[in-house]
Figure 1 (cartoon, rainbow over the protein chains, first blue to last red):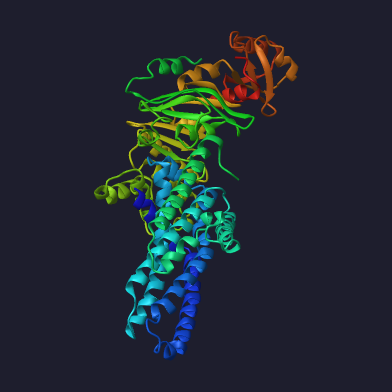
Figure 2 (figure 1 turned 180 degrees about the vertical axis):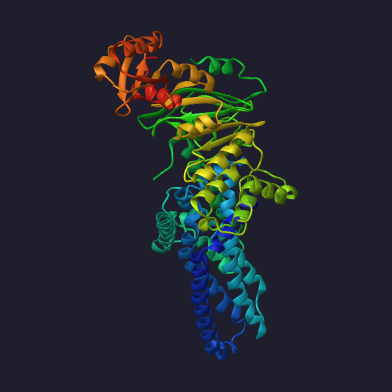
Length: 250
Length: 323
């Protein structure tokens, strides 16, 4: 049942012009970053040849590319997730789901997984750009895999935030602004307090990508993402259940 | 007046009772939209819910379908408590809300398949279920069209189709014929009559003749309460005690009509036609005939008012019932 709902969300996303435009713009920006990084790599390559244990293309091109993708998708995910629940409310289609013999948990998980499945597309595109380097050299596939896993977890957390803010309103654009605000605030929390032991680092979502970006899969970071996702999904379910008791938000 | 309804609650636990709501209330802030309403429905019955705008009809239907939780009271569907076991209870319900819940970006076929899957129709049966419901709702050749591109009447049909495709025991329709032309209305009424066979149907409507055409029982809501709940036959009897339709060639002043013992009010329907409210105990018919002869009023027609339901409806919703 969850997958039926996820499939429906995926289909609705692909039926909207917004999703295609977001994908196209993302790809344009990331391709630009990729080519700039590649140019820079070619410039320093002759000097790197003299170094022992020099960083390769994966460190100098692929890791910065994933880092850029993380920031750009932080802006894009709220736009992709804003409609999930808010628009169902505005179009009064939520009734179809609420009247069906499925639980609120299934509805929310279905919507979340639908968005995550869609976000697999930009991850795939970024990974494909990186893999294209294999045509002319070698890649550190372990580093690439760590980056892909980290980006996937990061985007899943962004998606959970998007689902939650979408459940707070019936205006998709308000949901997008709320999600963007939350994500930027969490990013700034770590930028403003560079000390890695600072308490604000705990709420920073992007910081939980840094060790993946450097090639390390830290189980504490994985657990942090899983917990954050569970929390936002739980809050969304609670919000929708509450709605049956007190009525819909305006 | 409420004889049938109270019998219903006495056999509340029997297998034939499909919907049983006990003293349900719903509060929105300080506003009490539905107050202590009882509702019982048996298999094979069609209940028409009538009432002026804001009477609480839609809120009641939203509670019966699990879209809103009641502030107080309990609801059971086919013996399953809707609040305690919502998923199990909702298996037995099909619901067409006031605004059909349609995804504009899907085609009719895609949407009906989705609705069937959500209601747990087995994968192998999907094509057969979708085809049969399309045939029943007159959606034969619209399968490939986008819902957003359909006319209001067709959208309404798709809304009805999603409410009945999983063969629910209880079908709840909130104003099912809104936006349909008269021919489509007749088709939908025929469909509702066919649905009745082994199910219960609740429909809310503004259209009084619709209730007379398809319903077995009528519930009239006013200010959040069910002020009348009985069979169409009982309604007949009741309305006989409420209004007379009189036509006179040389009508006297309205005061003279009002002076006839047993007449409670006079309403002119034209130069020669009158609607007389009458006392439930004293029938003024004979007296009117005698005075007409004596004073040459030229009586040429007398009988119970034509739209019996309208009369009861106006009577009950005009002011707060004494009860």
